[in-house]
Image 1 (cartoon, rainbow, N blue to C red):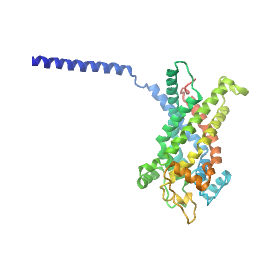
Image 2 (cartoon, helix red, strand yellow):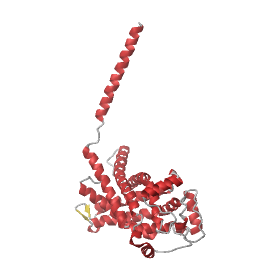
Image 3 (cartoon, rainbow, N blue to C red):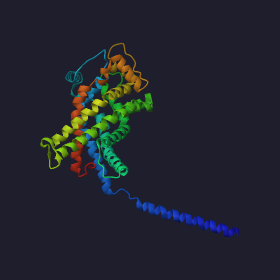
Length: 355
């Protein structure tokens, strides 16, 4: 009897294993691996996003550097107040190369950031629209609010993936030839910060960055796509020809999107930059001037940085550098959107999810 029980138990175990193997086989047959065409399409989309980011940021690199310098400039040792004056000062003290200082680091960060951002937006739009249609049970279309959500998701993913590069880019941008310690490049800055300040320092200012990226990137995509849809459907002023918008019109849509997004999120960008300077022992020479009285840069967090900035410098300090940033953002966002769409069209990639 014992041997028969063992045999029945063994047969049952073998039967169970066979059944599980058959179920696994059926399940694997139902899951299709990404085709080479799908992988190529993903690669092309990432390339288009990267090219768009590199082209748009290089075009406005001098204004980007001036914006960051204005954001961290000592209020008691002001060297320049406006865009033209600031650019002239950089040209006079550092020459032509000074206008593009930090751009290599910026592009090294923005190329993957832009690639991930545009690709994530496309995928998030598809996922959000699919889920929305499942909930409503009808052939719903993307609304501005849904686009805002997709853009916010894309911004958070892209920002988190490339934040250490953004952190060291800020420091490389603000250092001058007179800075006591010179970061020699991206790798040197990353390793120096990691060694002297710890790994958490590479994500200092991450929270205000993520909070700021939600309205910034979200509004960029929402305003741009919604404006295009409205123009195509209403056809005002003869701007639409054969259901297509001209490059000039799309640039205008991108400019409007960039203006709205950066105005809303700009104070958080200022706080992010200032928090990134915390822990850098030579930051005082940049942020608090070249005099002997150099106050240390200490913020316990995002709220503390807001409070101290407003208390010591006034509410207007939260918008330091807004003018050069506006001059920069308008063409930058516009160029990025249009370049992305043009490159995708050239590469033969399907455009974004249609409504």
